[in-house]
Amino acid sequence: MKLLVNAYPLRDAGLLLLRIGLGLMFMVHGGPKLAGGPAYWQKIGESLAAFGITFLPQFWGFMAGFAEFGGGLLLLLGLFFRPSCLLLLITMVVATNSHLSRGDDLNGASHAIEAGVTFLGLLFIGPGRFSLDEKLFKSSRGQRRGKVRVK
Image 1 (spheres, rainbow, N blue to C red):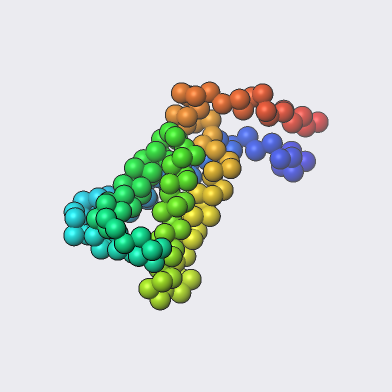
Image 2 (cartoon, rainbow, N blue to C red):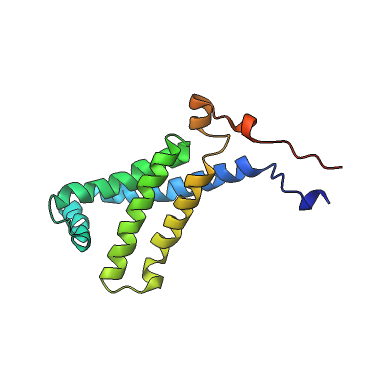
């Protein structure tokens, strides 16, 4: 019967694994964008034309790489977790639109869609106990959470 109780004793460990995996992957995706230089940033930034944003494409291209690499690092650490999830969610909305506007089907845009949905969910869940946010800013988790008793 204990397996049926929604106590989730490993919730924080699961969130840590999710943060580490996603954070590392976004650092891997964002690193080459940051290192690509102005010509590459220009190419990435031009994809914002689909949103009507045609000014400063190099800046926006750099920001895409920065959002992925820096957001991935913050996600991994669990530091400024919700703002970094929001930043990454917005980046994934732009990436999804980029894929779809150049003619990719849902399979082509699926990575960005799946990551975006994950970041949206993480916005609600939070970083978990094993995060720098928890260590530095001390949430009120203990006060909000009741203990589940199983007989």
